[in-house]
Length: 121
Image 1 (cartoon, rainbow, N blue to C red):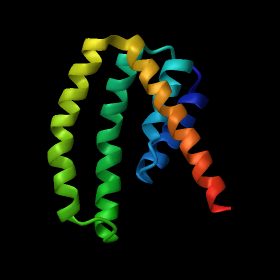
Image 2: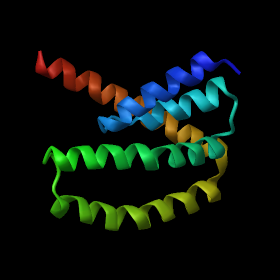
Image 3: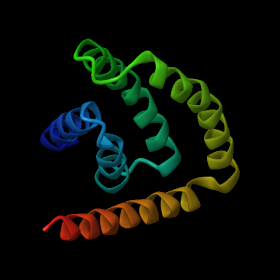
């Protein structure tokens, strides 16, 4: 196990996650491509990692008054059942398809960002 990769994945995932930029994507990519962890396990590890990272980021953003409880509470209330549905779906469709869907999502987001950045210039 190469600790440089682990360190880099943790730092990058934490920093991106704290900025709300999807650090979990980096962590899942590291876990599946470099560490050889199966997709479903990688998702579970990512969710466990997300809890403290999200808590720190949420507290920081609340202190800076960048988010309000009025906007936060509905997201939490709908996010919890969404997480339950997502977990059930991932178990139903299996790791191979979950990985494909995740990969497709990354490609779509990347293309979208490239198109958005070109429109700004």
